[in-house]
Image 1 (tube, rainbow, N blue to C red):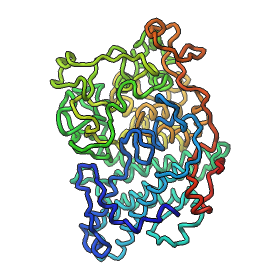
Image 2: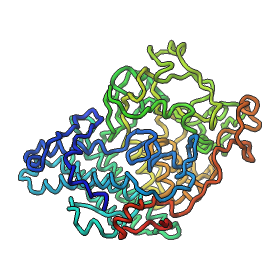
Image 3: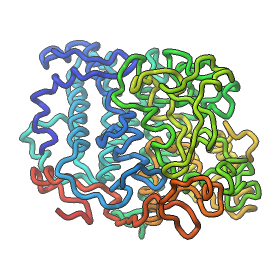
Image 4: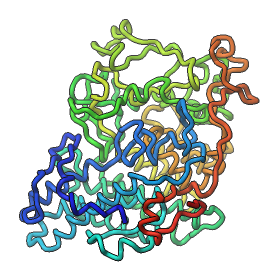
Length: 581
């Protein structure tokens, strides 16, 4: 199996990797096997490299860990955003790759977690290395979960195997067996990790529990709506067990009281947007807050000022680079808590900004409106952080691409391209609250108002304090679906953070959602019709821009195909259903 064919040869060489973090995570380059495992500090030093393996920005990178870019979990592979070229994954036309760096990278990293755990067994003072042991279990679970999300069934590895081990050349373990081991690892990690750490960025007990809620919710809903990739049969006993784990893990994080949603009175409704661009180097928001003020990130990929991230975050996401679709814009509720098709407050599409009026405030802090003043990191930037900065600003013109433009992830201070130092949220508290609401609902197809107020409504109302909370009476009186409103909230809150395509797959709604045309703004009968002379794209029957059509879905797309080189090395792996070499 190629995934381990050269691991042993450079096991300790890999430890020279540069780790972009506020932690001291740069392992020694010369730690040989005869000395690495002789003292607790070396176990910790070895475990430090694990922190460079989480998701991150890395825009334009197709491989694992690419965060908001076109990686396996990217929103670009979903139904909500597009770019200037066809995304074959979103379009349903991707093919079997010859090789896949995601596959080999994940298994190489699993090897290192197993190596630490194996060497720890013979160390005399177990208590002194309890934290790196727990960290290794957390990241082993994290990496195996990536395998399940991408490929479904996967070879489960819980020890560092020699290259000639027959276990490396066998068939894949059933996804359920892998998930069970992931859950066990995360439960063990929660027991071994501290509730808080003195060093920002370390995994804690609550990070393990939050990750457990993510895993169990994912697989619990998968088992509820799928069996063997089909949505025709459900596995009730399995889904109930997993959803109970998800609910309880999320509730433990809530009850722990260590985290809260980020909100600042000075920032007000802009709190949601500024949370994602908090830095430490210089003032980066009107309230002069920094990363230490972020109470929401449970686990983040940390970045230091002065580090080259290797990717241009602001220019890679701000304004017309990211083609936000009409579908996403229409998901935002109106101030009365109703969808646009049901609300009397909806302003329609007549002007370039009418649809933004009286909407969920996250719409205007995630999408930028035509004519709005804004700043970026090189042409015009903020210096006083007062209204005086408006004299040195840019003005957005949305008349390009989809007609909807992105505001999220764009810094406002002067900083060289790719040197932004905001952290990437691997797990944040808002997700945990939404995990709880969804797990509770999917367990019995019902959720109490008390549980909604404990979870989802906190997320919805932090920047929408005049909006009514979601309740059973509100659902009933307005002919809404509780399930759809819970899913709507998740989609809006976690937009551009790498959740949407995996959510569509686990809900088994991808066949209906992914075949829809990707649309831009409504042109016919609106301001755009007479003010966008360069608009030459095809329009649909409703007069909306068609970005991409002819999109397809086949149930084989629930999982990625295994790369052909791995199947040549080990035919026992078996290709995923529907894919043929």
